[in-house]
Length: 212
Image (cartoon, rainbow, N blue to C red):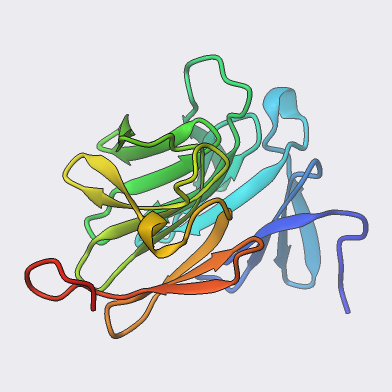
């Protein structure tokens, strides 16, 4: 039995070599490889920092989302900064990183949602609702992206339509409970894990927009 005593672990990933990566709060990033742990300090000024999200992309590069140092990527044996939110904000934490089927990277943060492609990031706005914190991202079989939200207004689930996020589920009673997990199924639905509101499932819509 191996463990990192006292460290709250937020994210786990496995790379192509079989190494296991653990993102912890206030105690940096740890790699378990060949029977030993190696620590990587990803906070500002070489502090350990908090790592809230990890994502292995299609090129087998590890992306790490931090509490206060933006997004970093592991290449050639070291982490390099990729992006950080440029404006003042009370919460710049990167809670989720997701690569879609087009190879675009999505960063869900305490300051909103960002899409990173070709070396540039753009912020995605919400249509007629307060977005809050983005805590989960998933893509359904049709290619539509879904986003789980926390705090902000009553909307806690949204999907991407064009260049905007459109709120979902409020009319069905899914509101006010933070969404921390999303998972697509083979039937086109999305399973939704909430804090305090139980487990939900968003069904695919039939032709003409009627719920499935």
